[in-house]
Structure formats: C-alpha cells, structure tokens
Amino acid sequence: MSIEFWAGVLLSGIVGFPVAIITNLYSDQVRDYLDRRRVIKLNKMRALELQTYQRVLGLVEGDPTQTLLLGEQRHMIGWTFLLLYLFYGMIAVLFYFRPEILSVVPRFVLVTTIIIFLLGTSIISLISLILFDGHRTTMRKVRRFPEYEAQIREKWGDDAI
Image 1 (cartoon, rainbow, N blue to C red):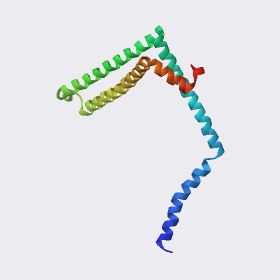
Image 2: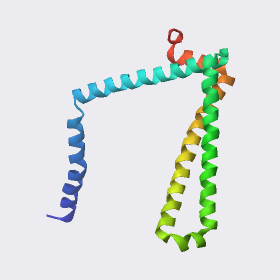
Image 3: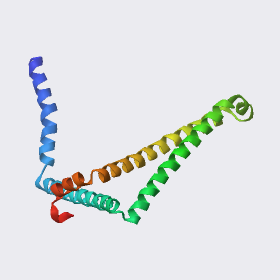
Image 4: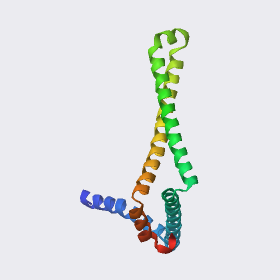
C-alpha cells in the first residue's frame, strides 16, 4: 500500500468523523430546541426594545420620572469619572513618593497596591464608558425620535407600541 492510499484514508477519517458526529447530533429534537430558543430570544429582544422605546417616549413627552432617571445616569457618569481621577491621583502619589514608601513597606506591597489601583481604574473606566454609551444612545434616540419611532413601528408593527 502506498503513502497516497494511507493519506486518503487519514484525510477521510479526519474530515468524515467530525461531519458524522455533527449530522447525528443535529437531530429533530436539537432543531426544535434551537427554534424554541430563537423565539424566546426574539421575544426578549422585543421586550427590551419596547421598554427602551417607552423610556425615550417618556423623555420626549417630558415625563419627570424619566427625566430624573436620565439625570441620575448623568450623575453616576460624573461620579465614575471623579473616582477614576482619584485613583489616577493615588497612583501618581504612589509613584512620586516611591523611594520614601519603599523605605517603610516592602516592594511587593507597593507593587500589589499599584496593581490594585490600576485594576480599579480599568473597572471604573469600563463602567463609565458603558454608562456614557447608554446615555449617548438614549439622547440620540430622543433627538431623532420620529425616525426612531418609525423604525420601531416598522420592526415590531403598529400594535406593539
């Protein structure tokens, strides 16, 4: 038997075996489950989009509750940026007074503290970016409300709103 024969057998085994497993696993029960899951996911997405629409509608109509929630979101963005700069200041102080600090505490403690502050700034930056993006998206929908409303009506139908 030549090497080409065994290469063909090996290649057909490598390709054929996973394909056989996948075709056996993709049964009617799996397809039904995936279809049900798709419907559930679509309903959840619809509910979230309609909830966002109601929030934007409340802002456009001047609902005090929605206005207060938007103000609270802006307030939280400000606080996260304040905490972020506070952490940056602490890191700068640790680096500036590093020789004096190293005479009191071991290098390991200083490095661990700096790593904790850097990790904290990363988490706070991520939170503030998420909050800011949500605020920006909401305000864009408020500014372009007629287009946004037409898009929601087209996507989910007039009876959904």
